[in-house]
Every structure is written in C-alpha cells, then in structure tokens.
Length: 262
Image 1 (cartoon, rainbow, N blue to C red):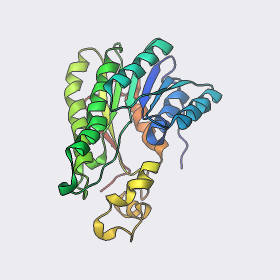
Image 2 (image 1 turned 90 degrees about the horizontal axis):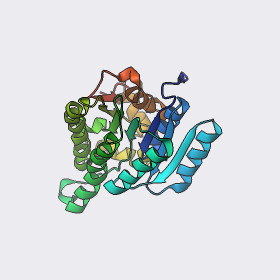
Image 3 (image 1 turned 135 degrees about the vertical axis):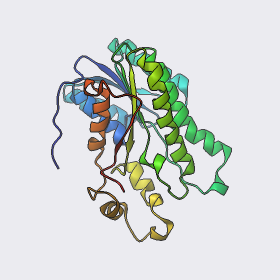
C-alpha cells in the first residue's frame, strides 16, 4: 500500500473530532495531528483508548486532549467544543465521526430505536455543527459523516441508512447558511472499512442468503472496484482533504470514499 504523504496543512489550527477514540475517528485524529493540528478527541465510553491515542499523538510531537462527550447529548458536545476552544484558543475544524449502527426488520423497529439512532447519527451531528460554527471564523471547516448506505438498499438497515441520508441533506442546506460566514460544510460517506464496527456488523450487510457463506473481505473482492475493504487511514485522508484549504471551494457536498463500490 502506498504511504500517505504528510504535510503541514493544519499547522497552527485546532480541531475537534467526535467519536475520535477508535476506528475512522481515531485515524482522522492521527491524520490531523500529523499535519500540525491541535486535536480534541471526543469519546463516549472508552477512556483508555482515548487516553492512549492522546499519549501516542504527544509522543509523535502532536498536541491533543481527550474529552468525554456523548454525541447523543448536545450539551455534552457543546462542552467538548468549548473546552477545546478554551484549551487551544480557537476552533478551525470539526470532524464528526461519532455514530452507531442498527439492523432490524421493519416490524421490530421501536420508537426508542428511532430516537437512539437518529439521536446520535443525525441530531448529534446537527448540534455538533451548530456549536462548532458558533466558534469558527471565516475559513472554518465542518465535516460530517454519512455512509454509502444512504444510497444503497440493505436488508434491515432502514433506520441507520435514513439517519445518514438526513446528514447529506443537512450539509447541502447548511452550506448556503454557513457560506455567508465563510465556513464550509461537507460530509464523507465511507464504504466498507476495516474497523471493529465492521467486524461486529459486517455480516449484516450481506444478502441474507449469503450470510455464513461469504466474508466481508470476499464480498469486497466482488463488489468493490479495488477488491478490498478500506483501511481507516485511507478514509481519514478524505476527511483531511475536506477539512483543509485544498477544499476551500467545496461545500454542501458528500464525498464517497468507497473504493469504487458497485
């Protein structure tokens, strides 16, 4: 695999990454810190992983802090962002990676399921954007997280997919409003990625007749142009692009990072 080229695109800037203790979020935190950003890592429950990542980034010469914040609670997200601003003196980038999965048939979905999934994946991202934008100056960058599932039919995936489709509409509409302040807002729609979440839920993405007969890696070999799952660092590169000045004229869009899924 080709090594990613590290630059200093975020030197002197400060970023908040929600869901930053594991998976794609942790890879984004590493990428931003590796390019010079001071990073506040939001996490819900895994304090050990978050603290270990902060120590890792510090050992590499980066500046980072970990803050417990449940993305389902807008006030905790507000506190995360305000702590980052207090500690770093500014906020230039928000990357919202916090999210939860859900698979269930229509007849089994409950109002509590709806509230839980949309509370994190949709409401949580909306208020993260709101609180971040309040502290950003011209040139601020907000990057939310959708999913390729927003545009694909998967058995039992209605709640999750629709919560992510709402995010794509969110960035489209907020782009007009935030553009008046010189702030861009976009989203990344990751495809299959080699994370612990994928290991836990990957089989659910398969057609029911294929469950137990095919692994996610085998599925990717057939359904993805590049014939494999993404590494978190490869998806993080997409977030870093949208968070950088390289994407200064891109807003309201959702960028698919899926290896050519078909």
